[in-house]
Every structure is written in C-alpha cells, then in structure tokens.
Image (cartoon, rainbow, N blue to C red; front, side, top):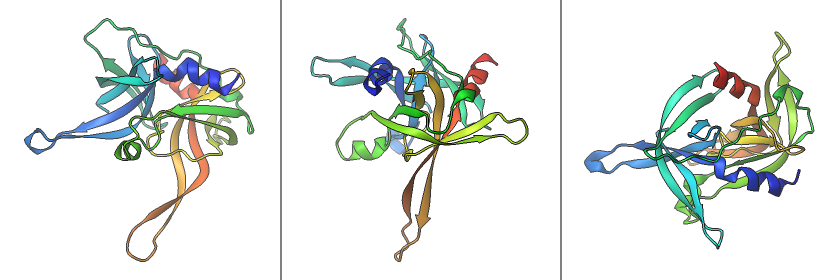
Length: 218
C-alpha cells in the first residue's frame, strides 16, 4: 500500500491532544501534550482536556481545526495507553480508524508509517501553525516478554519527537494499525553553562495495538 494512500485515508482521524492550564486573571495557557486517533464515530479516541480535531479543508488544501473538551474513559498505565471521549454538544459523527491488525505478527524489518503532531509547540512558536507530519520507517527491534513470549513493545528506526506520542503506527503492506508511538530514546549531555541538550537517536518505542484492543474490550 502506498504511504500517500495511508495518509489520505486516515489523516482526518488523527487529533492533537492538549491540556489547558488555568492561570491568574483568566490568563491560562494551552500545553500541547501529544497525538491521538479516533476509533469510533461518536469520538472515542486512543492516547488532556482539550483536543483539536481536523475540521474543514478548503480548495487550497488548508485545514481548519475544531476544538473540543474530552474526558478519560479508561487507562492502561502499565502500557502507557488511554481511552478518551470527545465531548460534543452536536450530533456530529467523526471520521475514525477501525482497521486494526494483529501486533503479534509484526516482524523486525517490517515497513511502517506513523502520523502525528511532532514538536507542535515549537512549530506554533515558529509561526508554522498546526502541522501534521508522517514518518516512514522500519521496525528495528521486537521485544517480547520472557514469561509468556507475548509482544511487549517494538522499536522503530526513527526518532519519536515530543508531540508524537499517541500516534497510530500503520503497517505499510496493508494500512492496518499495529501499534501506538509511546516514547523516544535520546542521550543527554551537560556542556559547560548548565544547559542540558538531548541528542536524538534513530530509535523510538511503540506499544502493540493488541493492548489497545484489550483496553477497548474490557
């Protein structure tokens, strides 16, 4: 399956997750925390209080975003996953992703694509606006549990930036979701002057989609 086909089919189901932090004199601020993806027409999604959802795309391919509140339904803290619900006063049906694969079948070297909002805060500060981005990479390592051999997590050969956590990971062959991006790996160095720098590695951690299916069905 072409990467462009996966992007076009699923882009309107990928959402930006942000938390509103109240401040003095009603001067609150929005902290962008990551990405999520809608899994039902009524707005349930996987991935803290406000989310921006792709709304309309005009003839120039410019997308506007609708903002909603959200509530937590379930959480799997061990596997860093949450099921949430968009709160909407309208009867709107959301575009959603339902093509889940079997993450137990993934193999080292499989080609994957993930979509999300990496470095969203930084890009907004640079006047680039809300920017969805896609990555095409391979599964670089598959880690299984010693106790039963089940898939615990897998790694990809690219850096998962801040803001990408919660992005769906698609198997390129068929476009099925087989995981969720969860964390980055980097090396911290302390140069003179007291500032800390992260040196990103081409390694990212992803959670198997079977954990998502378990969370939904519980």
